[in-house]
Image (cartoon, rainbow, N blue to C red; front, side, top):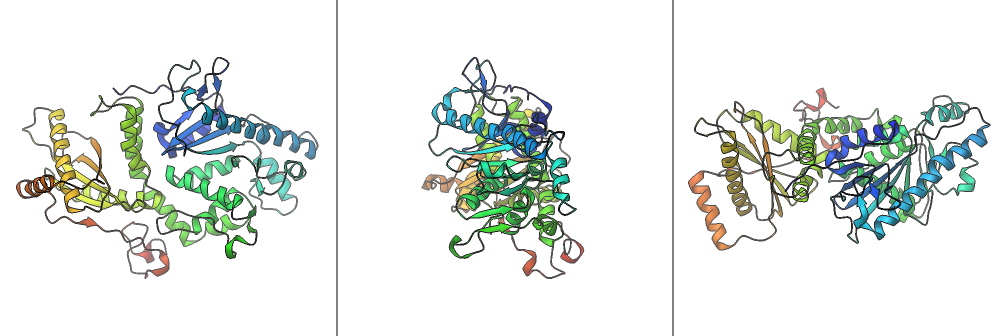
Length: 482
């Protein structure tokens, strides 16, 4: 039975800001402020914990550590660094160690009554650590402007520096503990930028992984600021839409730097315009995930209320795991189809995920008519019809390993609701199921003549000015992102 998830409130304003911003990316279903471990009457694990797809992200927000501008710079910097970064890293590594040893002793509240709802006991659980700092930007800008006006006021990264050395270099951050799990040190500009520009769980997590590997394995030594690392990452797009941070040298033989102007340059490029529009195009998909997420957390669902929390979260995770590249494409395909379907006509569209090639979505638009006793009766019949679509899809497209059915009303309906169901399509159909699928196609006219909507993941580098813009706007390239 699905029950509401009751979370602890954030302790201070800085933590509330972090939680609000992070929830936009990870949604209420996977974001948890102030988890507790059953030690000393309930001890806080981290200021914010995010869990998504067997990955745990622990945030420590030291926004309350004030930079003492009235003190000599070297004194103020050492005190701030130790309070905001050293102590934060120590808290994060302690939390990580406890979770690894006692994954069953993490709770949603200080009384330690409600256990954390996800399984974090798996041996391959990945943990990312993020130290968030606030209130340092103005002092950093004044310092860097004294050398050359125009600083962004962000902390610069010189990863090989020891703590002794970094304390002699104001407003520089390092690889805090090279022998332990990497700690991402982000000032307020950095964390807000990452959660805005990497607006899906998969994109954000992939960036953290790439940055860690760039520092620890690919010899990234210096970076002007987090925004510059992000720009480098976004400009190294892979075919699946994710970015990367490669070493430009041969076989990582030479250390490399990321210049402090990387972000300002990138903001003026066509690549960024495409990225921006991709992010914007995918917002409709994000709104759908947000609605489902909030409904699951509050246990206010229209269907499957008898199913446990974890089952609901696993189904929604498919939609949430689509990266920006794929989310924009799926969102356009979904809403375009909705607009095309006439009132009171059943119709469907099959669309492939761009970042998960073996995943197919089937968008089923099911009409209302006056024969239904009530709206609940309509939803039950729509769900039954979606299951028929699932069987036929698996029959027609056996290469798919994951099938996600999305059901919704057509235009002009008496209600408005959506239903998501997921099927494991990795097990081949039996001869009986294949015959059943053929009969469904014949008797109910399901997916006869319907083919997969094919993607065209091109880039601006190989399109002509009069071609459709790859951002998905529907306009010609020359009138959109050229």
